[in-house]
Amino acid sequence: MNTDSLVKNLKLDYGLVDDNAKAVQSSVIQKAINEISAAGGGRLILPKGTYRFARIHFKLNVHLLIEYSQIVKGRLK
Image 1 (cartoon, helix red, strand yellow):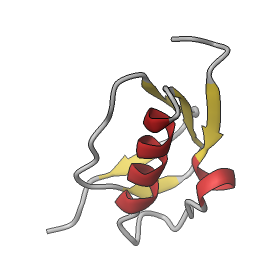
Image 2 (cartoon, one colour; image 1 turned 90 degrees about the vertical axis):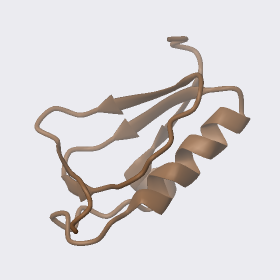
Image 3 (cartoon, helix red, strand yellow; image 1 turned 45 degrees about the vertical axis):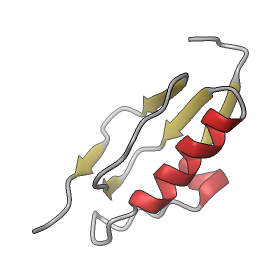
Image 4 (cartoon, one colour; image 1 turned 135 degrees about the vertical axis):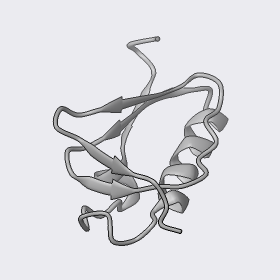
């Protein structure tokens, strides 16, 4: 991982909401992954909170950094 690469925060830069995993926010994280990949790669910070995601497609050179005490839940059926 290149420590000089682009760094973005899902909450601050993309509007991710810590809603105790009530809503699926996959579109937020996918948009961030796509943009960082298009810029040549980088690091994406997932801040402490409780989030719900489903069907996320990671791309080359995009590193997800998850803060301590993180809770990520899958999609509800």
